[in-house]
Length: 72
Image (cartoon, rainbow, N blue to C red; front, side, top):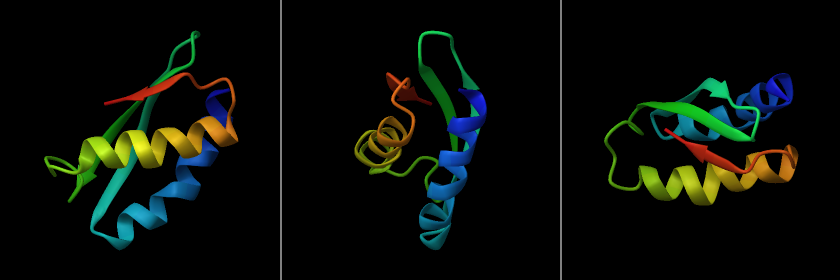
């Protein structure tokens, strides 16, 4: 699952980078919780929670059904 999650994050990153932000994979637990680190313009942005839940989490869940949640 780890490699699938990393691949999906790599597909998302260009969209975040276009706005000056980025997302780095940290870890994935056995129960499907993915931990990421938001960097660049995403770090500290008031919209980062929406980006995380409505963007990153939604896309990861669609590409890797084992993912249950994405956290920072």
